[in-house]
Image (cartoon, rainbow, N blue to C red; front, side, top):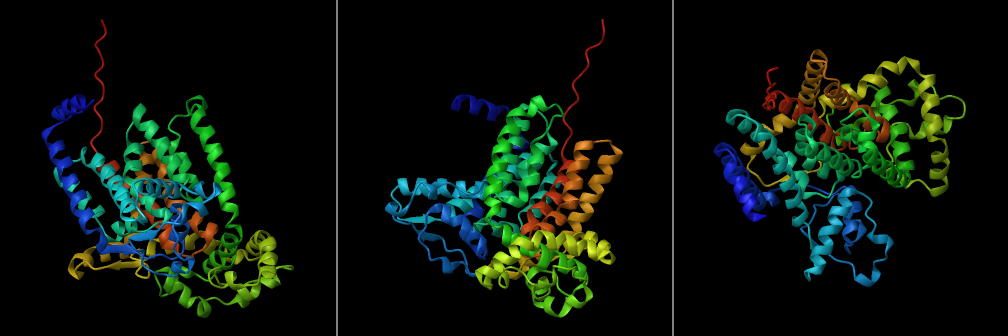
Length: 450
């Protein structure tokens, strides 16, 4: 096996070997410097780390940096149910925790997870680079070796795994063949299982029209969908609360025009920008007025359990009745998620920490400040190109990337909007660029007729 791998390596073009060597050196260099960037924990990361069976106090979740080491829970306290991962990210964390325990470690070393993310991310970039000219490959590498992106790999967010897999997903979307199609399906399942909001990514695994070709994949997708439904039911009240009191309220108030460009800034302005008196609350939904414009964290979570239960039974009905009772806001409800995503600040300074020199961060800071506009422009041009070339699958990809802000807002409101949306904006930039720059596969020669 090693001999065949060495033979394949010798047959690889010299330029490809040089690119592979460059990426390997980058992996080593970045591995040594990954501690210089991070995304701090906001609570989401703690849910994933519990899959590692760590003993850290839950109070740690309140906007503290992710430490490198966590003490393991005693094995006697871990039940069989605790070993069931709630996401693909959780499964990855749990796998590394099991390996570290087997090696005799008394603490979970978070760096193992960070390096896994980094290796997946650079591996996907390498596959794309192997089909690019040197100038284009270098430009793409500089674009993607972004400290604001790499910081995700030092966090336990579910979004981090999706970001790490984004280049691989793009490569598989643009190439054909048995291995690539299988890769598309595996990535679709992994990404979908990482978080409920990524359920539409399941469609990226469907590469052929005939259902017979997708039977096995669809069966796995059905089983996975059941698991996602169970997982999602645990957050039905928080998500429903944010969808109505935060998502609908912010859109009706024209959130894209507020002088704030990230989640924390919008939350600080909401009380002065949202006026319940401008909204018609239909009969039966007057109890919603006091919470209009708030978010579940902290307002809804602080309510007494009976009040939470009361709201939970009405949120779905209130959403639709309030929507239908205020037709004057129809345009804002449709347009605000898109325009807010385009103008958002994806630096997310309230979550980002770095010890890198300011001159190095500055150009990437400008890029991330206008990242949403870049993603919107790239996806729009990709859609137009796909329609002109009558490439239906690529057109559907582009439509999905363009419309994703609606799924975020009317799934979980504007709460941490940029964090939830960023993996899709990354695909929105990377997919059109790779499609434009990657070399087309050679057309098979047609044998002359005899």
